[in-house]
Length: 223
Image 1 (cartoon, rainbow, N blue to C red):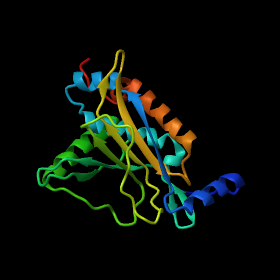
Image 2 (tube, helix red, strand yellow; image 1 turned 180 degrees about the vertical axis):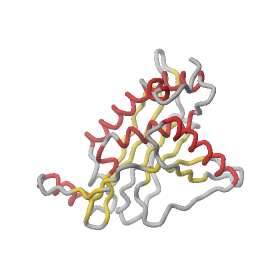
Image 3 (cartoon, rainbow, N blue to C red; image 1 turned 90 degrees about the vertical axis):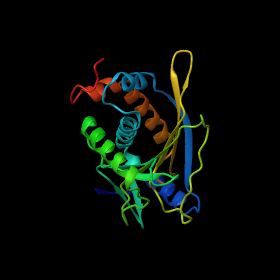
Image 4 (spheres, rainbow, N blue to C red; image 1 turned 120 degrees about the vertical axis):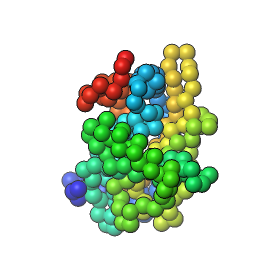
């Protein structure tokens, strides 16, 4: 983790100061990504599961866009070296979801295995607490019941929360691809439209090349 300063970019500093003072400084975009190759890989693989594999790609894409790792701490901005995706999963203990937090690992298969283990644990022992004071999260969720065009999140009222939120929805078959909505919300003092555009570009590239990503560290598919 390191501190981020904008002393060499006065206009960037003004941008930061302007948006961080707002009561509601978050903005969001929803766009569709093509998951054709990803869906084929998961369906043909004897081991890969949709959710943990997608969480890996979503988190990896976030780590490739620097501003997605930045967090506001008082008057300072820090950059995390890695992130912990915390995603919603169903539980047997209640009709509502549980948080499932898994430290990111570069090795996609190691992360996938750890995520499955934690998802199984949350079925019996659900959690709804974050680590006090921690801001290295990436908050993720899913809405698989419909193809949405926008998402509004419940947020703390002081506007200081700078953890990005990402939600994916129900995918649909098109003529030549399978499209899935992905909604991204971020703090505008740290992230702007160019950053969101870059995030979608990186995520789409990872989805397109998912077979190479998941077979780089071992054989996870018989295809």
